[in-house]
Image (cartoon, rainbow, N blue to C red; front, side, top):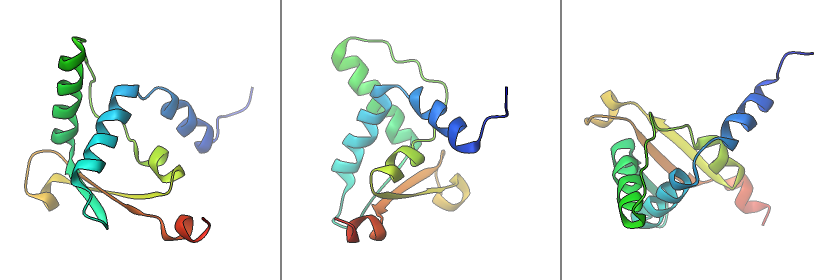
Length: 106
C-alpha cells in the first residue's frame, strides 16, 4: 500500500458530495449570475438545500458545507472563497467566475 496523493484524496472527497448540494449551488449561480460572476454565502446554500429538500419532502442533513470549488473548477469556473470577516456576515462567501484559460480552449 502506498500513501494517497492530494489529487486522489480530493477525488474521493468530491465523490461524497451529495447531489442536492451541487443542485443548490447550480441554482444559486444561475440566480446570482450578473454576466461576470455569481457571489453568495454558505448560508444561501444551506437555505437552498433546505428549500429543495422541503419541495421533495426529503430530509437533508448536511453537516458543514463541503468544498465544492475543485468540482466547479474542473468545469471551467474560478472559485474564490472569502471568510466571514471579509464579507461582513455570518459564514463565508463563494465567488464564481469564468476561468479565462478554460474559455479560450472552447
